[in-house]
Image (tube, rainbow, N blue to C red; front, side):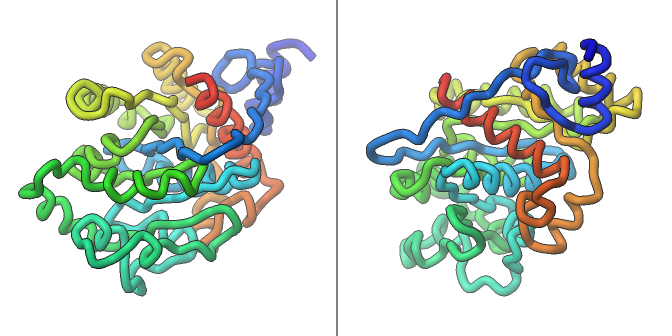
Length: 298
């Protein structure tokens, strides 16, 4: 098959084939998943961050987490959005919660084990959120070291997990600053739409500010193109522009637009179990391998 033909096949089916052109126009790498580390765990903390809503941030948090568990990694998802979308996406209705991540931020009365939910799927735990978290944005302002509040929650349990994924709120407020302060890496999901490009400079400026002033260990893990439709010139132009701006920081894996993702939210489970053989599930498994390889190189 010619390079042009292999790219057309990838565009049509969403298959990422090592050694052939992928949707980004680059050669898709042969991803060798690193073995599980021996000895005590020390979770890699990744903030899923974009101040624009509707870019696939929560979808990516849930499905990347589920795909990592299939590769033998233990994962904690932290729902850090007052809308509670990640909780809902795992079948936990925010309005039914007795306790949430808000209680861990604002009270010493509750422990991590009082709040964590660990019965959704093997290897995947959840710190849920609900609308109470919106009050923390105001209440934390008067706290000493307010940007360190989430780190104080996460650090004591990093030895339980291989990865901690934080689903950030669609803003650049104090909650997001907390998430970036607590993280080792930031993953930026970007919808393949023009308006998604407009706020990227503000987001990267915020990440740079946190790196310079608060968390010098914070790194950009990568930019993930979501809701991509290779049939449209617009999607292809946005992808090309992202490659110009971010270069190799753009993941080879591209998440394509599909009706399956909204269906999984209603079902309350990841696409890897809801539609395990779908292109969407394959894409997030590919992303999980890319994440493992990139983290191993850091």
